[in-house]
Each structure stands twice: as C-alpha cells, then as structure tokens.
Amino acid sequence: MARFAAGFMPGVRHDGSRWKPSDGLWYVRSGDQLPIKGIICQIRSDWMENCSTFGFPTWSSLLFPCLQCTATQDDWFDPPHTLTPSAFPWALHDAALYEQYVAGCEHWVQLTGTMVAEIKPHLSWDAAARGRALMKDFLHYNLLAGDRLEPSESLRDAALSDDLTFPYPLVCFWRRAAETRSRHRNPLFCAELGISHLYLMNDSLHCMYLGFSPDLLGTVVWHLMACDVWFQRREGRSNDERINRSILLLFGDIVEYYRDVSARDPSKNLTRANCITREMLGSAARPALSLKGMETKCLLPFGVLMLEKYMVYLGDVGSALKAACDAMTEMLTIFPPVDVGVTILPLWNGCMTWHGGTCALRKWGMSPPNQHDINSFI
View 1 (tube, rainbow, N blue to C red):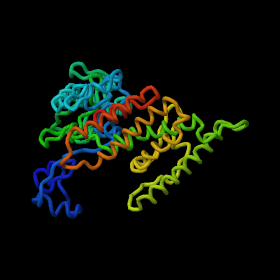
View 2: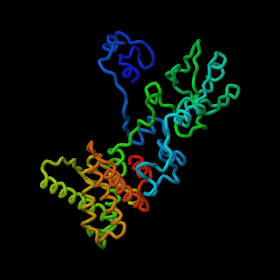
View 3: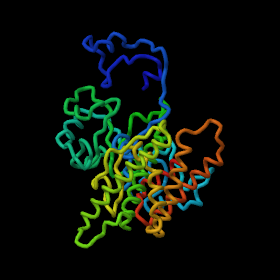
View 4: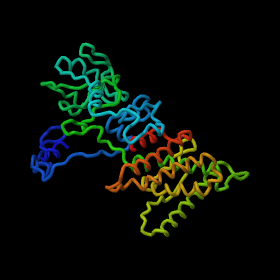
C-alpha cells in the first residue's frame, strides 16, 4: 500500500530482500512508476475478521467488546432515545487513542550479544501468549514472563530470532498483561498512509444480512414452531419429529413465496435458499437462520408475511417480532442504494424505526453484539 500510494512498483519483497530474476515481472518492473496512485478508503470485514486479523478483542470481552467506542458488556444495549443524529451514546476511539493503547503494550529493547545469549534459551512458542514469548522474568531488561516477541521493521519475522547475528536489531516485546483495546499492532494502521481502525466500516451486508437478520429470522421461525402454527403437535409425535415436519412445511411456504414474488415481478432478482434444515436454524435458546447474506435479505419480507398470516397464534412476542421485521424491511428501501439527494430526516426516521423494533427483542435473546453493531451502523 505504501508503494501504491507513492505511485511506484515495490523495489523489495515484504521481508525487505531484493527481487530476483526468477521473480519475473516483479524483478523487471521493480521501482517503475505506476500510471496511477491509490489509497484505502474503506476496509469492509465482519467482526471476527476485525478480531483475528486486525488484533482487536472479541465481543465477549467484558470491558472492551467494541473496537470503535467505549461501550462495555454492561451497557452496550442502548435505549432508543439516547441515539440521535448528532450524538452517539458512547465516546468514540480515534487514531491517537489507538496509538496510545498499542504503545502502552510495546517494550522496545536494543539487543546485545550478552542479552541474546541470556534470553534466547527462554524464548518459546506459547499458545496463551499467541506467539514466541519469554518463559521467565528479566527484570534488569524490563522484560517479564509472557512478553511476546513481535514482528517489526527491524525484525520482520519473529521466528527468525534464533538466527540473529551482529549487528543486533532493536526489537519489540508485547506485554499482554497491559492489553486493553488491542491484541497486537497491526502494520496496516499507519500514520504515513493515513490509515487507522476508523477505516473499518460497518456495512449493510455484515450488519444487516449476516449479523442481525439471521438472529431475527431464526427467532421468527422458532416462535412459529413453538406456537405450532403448522399444527404438528399431535399425540404420539415426538418433539424432534414435530420440529422436522414443521421445517418441511416452512420450506414449502418459502418456495410458494418465491413463486408468488416472481409471478408479480418477473424482473425481480431473487437469491433463493435451496433448502432449510434443522442445523441451519440454531436452537430455540440461540436462534439463527444460517444462510448467505443475499438469501437472508430476500427472506425478510417473507418473515413479515408469516407473522401477519399467523399473528392470531403468536401473542405479544409475535407483535414485537412483527415490529422488528417491519422496521428491517423498511430499511431495505434505504440501504442500498441511497439516492444522492436523500435528506437526513427520512433516512434517520427509517433507522430509528428499525432501532426501536430491534431493541424490543432483547428479552427474547437477541444477540448483544449484533444489536450494538446496528447502533454503530446507524
């Protein structure tokens, strides 16, 4: 990315070594000027990718579940009235705070021959430390057991530390005991390139169709089965048999829905689910309809139809689910796309209708991370 921003082909490999003739075009074009320059505008990824690749704590962290703000496990469900077009309920993290958190975990040491001979026998791969870490304290070097040897400009690969020779580099040890909002420094977040964690975008695919919507549709299906809308609760029939039969009838309703939509508008592009199995529905305690993003999107109006059709059997839970599904389908008219000339008021009203409907579902086990992701998205 640094070479792309500068407008030149890279002159070296990622490890800093020169290209060889065997590298073909990379060797021939090394250092050549590019016809264009480029920058990163957005980084789109799901929450797991943000944790595993970019080094942030997971959503199960008690104090730091969100990489973008100060929400904690205790307060990251937001009452609708505190979210406004001009204010977010929690303080946001900027690039300077990220740098502060990361720098607090880094301990830089200028290696010497004596130091290398002393600490090398006590550097081992440690799963808990997530890398090659010290097995004992070296207080005279300000190093503690568990400090992890990190890749850096001067040591690109921590696995090569056994082969260090004079002149010895300046190296970085990461102190896990001091971790807060980052598990390691990600080299992509670079002031030189102007890239920070703020470039990690909440988008409609990950927030809506792979995040909250599977929870919502899964909850709808399990509530329909709990209320026995397909009349499968009969004497001598086990609970597993009743559920399996209900799923078959559910898929029949889905196929009929696809047929009706295509008949009304043959030009409509429907991404269809090929099947629905019990394994794709999670459980009654943790419902989630596991489909691809666009398959989920195309089934949201179907959820509304099912709730309307069977509302007489569904009680207050059905009403809350209907409000959330109505809000979600309303959001489909806004994201995507948004017309260039759209004003903030209808956009905001649509967001808050959705937000209010989804907040009503907390008591029925909707996922807190997905709910908070929606808040950030709005």
